Image (cartoon, rainbow, N blue to C red; front, side):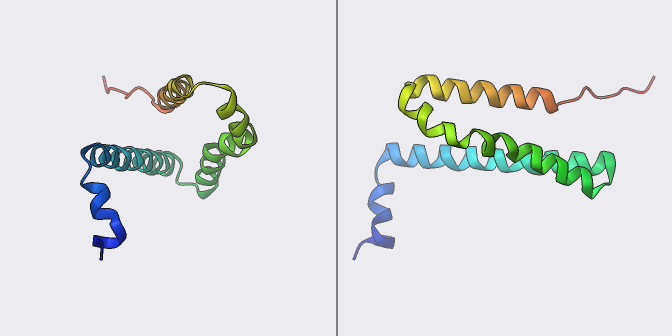
Length: 104
């Protein structure tokens, strides 16, 4: 019987191990970003309403653009799609960041 249904054979491949570690780190970074955004929202406002607004605004682009995703996946090359998603993520992170206030 294969270890855990064959997952041991998959992790025997070096490329799969590298991919898996990268995917886990990427997923965790998105999770940390979402938690940090909610935390900052709560810290600044102490309002559940603003937490809900931020949550809706965070998911709205995904819901709005989801129907176009399949079409774009068929039309655009994968390398251009990947570069585009990285650029959008960088812009999103830059818009959220606020400069720290320094006491004088």
